[in-house]
Image (cartoon, rainbow, N blue to C red; front, side, top):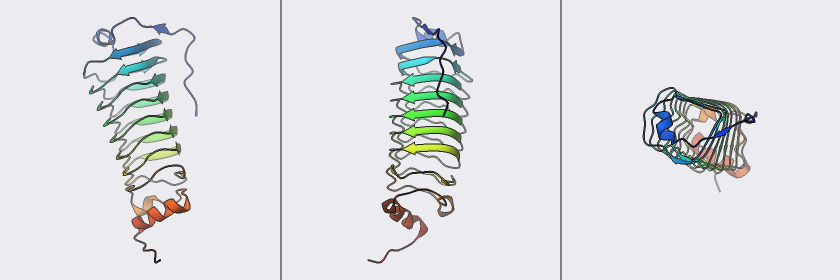
Length: 210
């Protein structure tokens, strides 16, 4: 995992971010905090080498965005469309992603820590060298995605849908997996506790006789 390495000089922005985004589709070497972004549609927004704290992106449509080497703390992306976006060397800490659409996106060297991503969509994504730590993913969808060098630790995966996503070599032993949805062919090689394995017997159609 390569964490964001921020430049020594980052300008603490005094701009209203809404005014800034009305004239720019690139945010670089900036620090925004305590702002609410009005619902907007912006394709191919680029955010590089920047810090966002307590910024509310709610309900915006930001398809094909590019996030690079940046940190987001206590931000709200609920119901934001971020499909077909790219995230490289990005850290999200204590952020909210309720209903966020990440479908068709690429994640490379990304960390989600203590976030809430209930009902989020990660369908048809490529996720590599990424850590998801102490995060709620209950009722989310991670269908038809490719996972490589993914670490999921102490996460809530209740009712999470992994259909057509291979869990080979993925360690879910610290996670809650009640009601997880997945095809039997995709669980080969997954790492579980003995109690969790009982949950997967339902998927395989195995009946355990007392």
